[in-house]
Length: 362
Image (cartoon, rainbow, N blue to C red; front, side, top):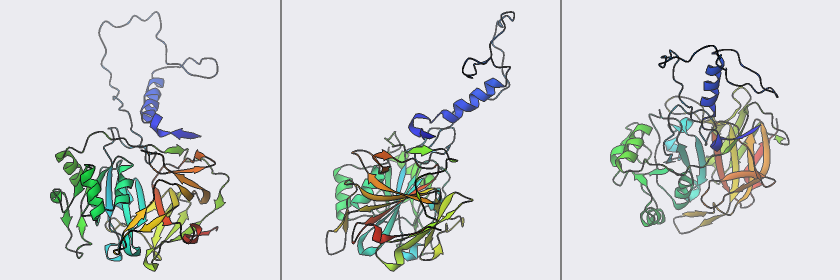
């Protein structure tokens, strides 16, 4: 059973309300097994004035279009797209377990950078270390309607931010008050922020309005996948040996736990594992632009991809329409994700896409 969450943000609230009504009396069953609401007896006159009810008023429950999970009883805010430092001195990071989506993509010199998309979880007391921006990182965050959060950037990235009037919070710009330096680490690996600070900064600069946030397609969490190949684990190699990650499936949590260079990736402060219900590995064309090793990463063309979920891998393609986010498709149709966090790992197409991925069946 596949559900499009863009059409069901109030579904949980409606269900709770209908259950409350059913407790008020017997239900009349219509043909086909559909239950109607209780009917008032003709002999019982309607009261002249409304009778106060002791039952609590049920608020609609929001469902995140990014995770497919319940997300509280208030409207979801605009996403935050935070550039996270992934250099070895910046590990382990803080706040990655609270992100709805997490991207990993190469930057110059063979290092990778993380882009964490936050929307559905309000209580994220520490996020970082925060690092600089590149054009394709702006593109990823913008595809979710996010406010871009960063500390500095390449000349090309600043040209986009300024020329296209992007709404961003830059620590070395006018948003410095919404970040802090941690004395336990050396710069530039010690810059942090929080969800509360970023929300305050977005409100201060008028960035907290409505945004066009795409929804993903989700399936029932108890649905058993068919047609995939066994994948109890997989190893992903970017370019440098210090940027090798493993994902290992845990049937108890129904998620893939992330490991970095043979060590489980844990949150620095809470000790919680960084994990995902869905992991999408996608190949893109990379091009070196200058002597500094800055890259161009094509996020529009589409290409080969693998979707890991529930201990299996599905082979397909990634696509992206204009104005939309990256999606995984198989046979021309969008594949449903399981409710939960999704990680996107972007690797070069050279020497080949599959040369970066090693799958362990069992």
